[in-house]
Image (cartoon, rainbow, N blue to C red; front, side, top):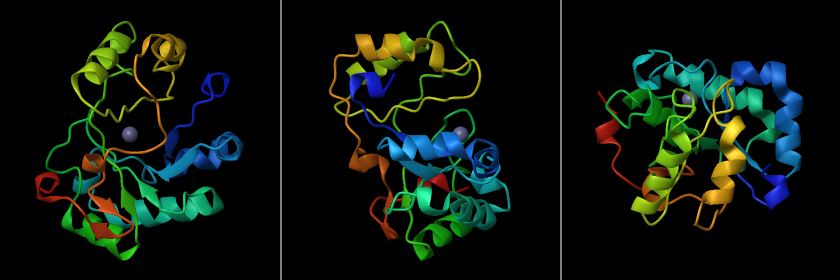
Length: 183
Ligand SMILES: [Zn+2]
């Protein structure tokens, strides 16, 4: 669906899932999509797992040559909340030391829990702000059935880039306060 419209996206993949679906990630990479780290086992939320450093580092090792050069990382949250516990001091330190780029979001329309309503929710979110970083999911029953409808209805330019406000850490440098994501 993305290729048919000439669109490029970012795929933040779970390290453990990559072991079973590497060919799919390799295809996405080959077609110009950016591949990022979404932890090894997807603890909810990452910052309260107690295993943050390993979650980050082991997933990056699993990505290998598929990883974007900026070492893109998206923490696993809890239902899309940008809330305390999303990160932790240990996680932030590991992201800085490993020169990662931490990518957050400003729209989570809930495709995985609202198959009938998420497209309208997403369109409303996109209309409400200048630049939306929209998080969708490829798990069964999530966005795939209605992604094409969203792409058809959306009245906004779709770019392969991130709003600066959604990138608190860029290549290991802290650009925005991260305290609000710490418990
Ligand atoms: Zn996730």
